[in-house]
Amino acid sequence: MSDAKWNPQQALGAMLRHAAVHSPYYSKQEWAPRMRERGGVALGDVPITPKALVRDQTAQFFCAVVPPSEGEVLTKATSGSTGEPMLIRKTQRQFAIQIAENLRLKRGWGFERHWRIVHTSAPNDDHPNGQIEQKEGPGGRREWTIYSGDTEAALDLLRRTSATHVLSSPSIMLEVLLRSSETSQPLALQLIATVSELMSDGLPELVRRIPGCRLVDMYGTVETGLIAIQCPLCDAYHLADRHMVVEIVTDEGQPAEPGEMGRVVVTPLFNLATPLIRYDTGDYAQLAKSAGCPRSPRAISRIIGRERNLFKLPDGRKVVPRIPHQTAQDIGLRQFKFVQTTVRDIELRYIPRDPGLEITQEAAQDMVDKYMVPGFRVRCVKVSELPRAPSGKYLMHECLI
Image 1 (cartoon, rainbow, N blue to C red):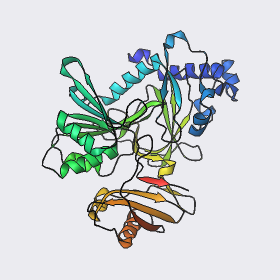
Image 2: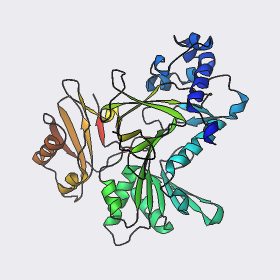
Image 3: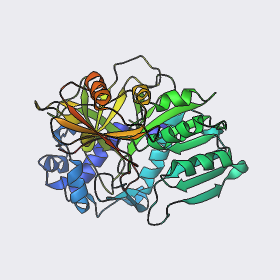
Image 4: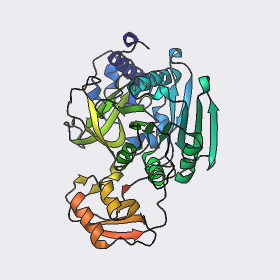
């Protein structure tokens, strides 16, 4: 699609006019009559749409009327990581625009140069645990998809196929590379792309140990499509701003300043089957300060995660519970998860590198006081496994209050 045909501002006006008439939810809002009467409506005039509302009342966001120019209407299910999966309707035209935007943002990483590719995915009703699918493509291209959270199975597939590119979650790849580093069998990987979860702190360091291998993280949701992807030049996340409007807003609803933590609010521009206007994704992020990157002047420096990934202090502040991967390795942790149970108490649930090792209370407390915030009381809980969510996602930090 050429730039001349891809006008985000024009698309925004068309989408707002369509939603004001045909969306059962948005047509009842205060701004909608002005839009129907061809009056002026700014995007900021539309209230933010909470994710929970879309999840609980999804049908209210479906439009019964979709112009024939948008093509076939298709249904896509979300992962269900925040509850039951949502069924989102999308149009054929929107899918085509999303693909073009994905390709634009992926330029420079060399995705197109790889012919042996592995995908890891969570099992589902159609694909039982452990199933491996194989596809043949033009020119000898081969792709394998393994439906499993078993890192040993993923590592075995990467070795057997000599894949040079893998698409996976950060937690799966972290464990795969840790296990691989313990053997004398190097992987053939040259490009690792991660999706679905927060970037694990230790993963970039492990990737740097693989000669010639690169790591790119991609951020998006099923309901909105790709939101941002890391830039091969500056490492920040450049925005998919040709098919959506991305805002980072404070909890008070004001635009966040660069470096300030804020909510990710997006408006997909081309889905007339399920318009989502100023949709709160449930994620937090930080806008990057302008670094003069020629690819884009605006970017996200850090994806922080959902509110349940943030720990709450007694004064109402939220903190990002981040522990350096090397620090965790130094005290003997193989896998771990912090869980906040009260405003004062957190649990360190862990699997040690050595099965006989016990992490001392003092070591855990010192780590939290130094890298998080003093004042939390830490309780160590040794476990045999750290289960994933039904969606297959792994939460390294979880707030239960």
